[in-house]
Amino acid sequence: AQKITQTQPGMFVQEKEAVTLDCTYDTSDPSYGLFWYKQPSSGEMIFLIYQGSYDQQNATEGRYSLNFQKARKSANLVISASQLGDSAMYFCAMRDHTGRRALTFGSGTRLQVQP
Amino acid sequence: DGGITQSPKYLFRKEGQNVTLSCEQNLNHDAMYWYRQDPGQGLRLIYYSQIVNDFQKGDIAEGYSVSREKKESFPLTVTSAQKNPTAFYLCASSIVGLENTGELFFGEGSRLTVL
Image (cartoon, rainbow over all chains, first blue to last red; front, side):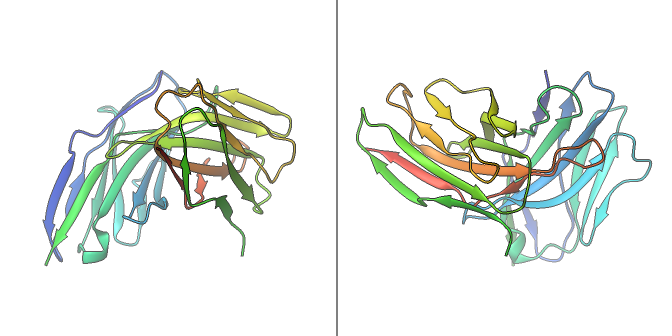
């Protein structure tokens, strides 16, 4: 069974600094996808970035990058130049390419950006 | 604009009553999903459907029921058998196909409170 672990319940970062949110995963499927979503206090889920298990390069989307270390089964999210609007819950999720194909989510990390 | 509409946004229910949460999408996606989120927690899969007239139980299906009579609609009924129904419910949809990442597109959520 798939499992996603986010070990940081909360993180603080100063505005304009970079921050890394940790995510480790466990799956027996050789083909899978890893996602990060942002959830502001309003509750909506905002897709940030995707990494496929066979992608050779780490994914990047603007200020977001994914530090993918396949051997360690980790997929950490790096946010550069933090902004006050980045304060939110962040969820790591995984989808395997067999079976149910629904995303399995981690427990989340609450990020607070301080001025 | 294309998207997912959930209604109602807030719902109050007395113990022992069934309640149905609506989810409609105009993205022409084949797959739809229901997740439950408790305060400070990640998302847990209740039910999912990859095609009309077919659906599967997720990890916490007990006390819930769904139907998928139309591609656009995937209503969730919270029955009186659900022991602790107070939660935030999120509906999502995705494209089906190995060539796609499987990214989920979410509605804005429905917050159910049992009095």
